Image (cartoon, rainbow, N blue to C red):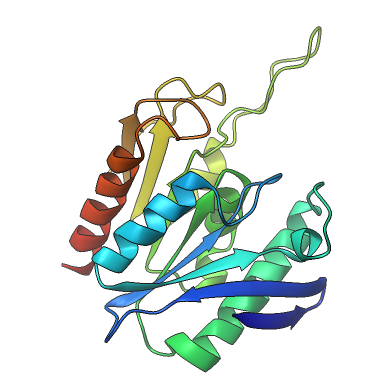
Length: 202
């Protein structure tokens, strides 16, 4: 495990090493969850099988025992600091793929340029914020996906209440059974991640 002091507190990185890795997959957790979520575990196992080392990043608010996430700009600042430290100590010169589930996927998208990611993996991207009773229609977060300039994979539950993003020339979208948790068909999640990583390296 690697502990990283960031401008917004202590982050914790759980490392899963691979022998002579083809690259590194760095994954962030969702807003209220941790790095042990089932879809992150499935993605980790798929990446290891594809020859990638994996780093699972716990944001400082989770390390401190809080459930409410920090503001977006703080999450992004922490993520960039952690990736820079990881590259200095472990992954220097390696192919870097950034990603995460839900909120963590948004962070990876927003910081893709700053981290020099060669690809971005989004598990359960929260495209549409939940609409409150009597409130206005929430604004789509599609712009965060559109801003990514490297190959991008979105693995989305077909019944995800946060919506289903569209694909594009550089964005693959794989619909799997289930909702935002992505728990219904973990082998499908793993297969999507493994296939995409293999294509990315090729």
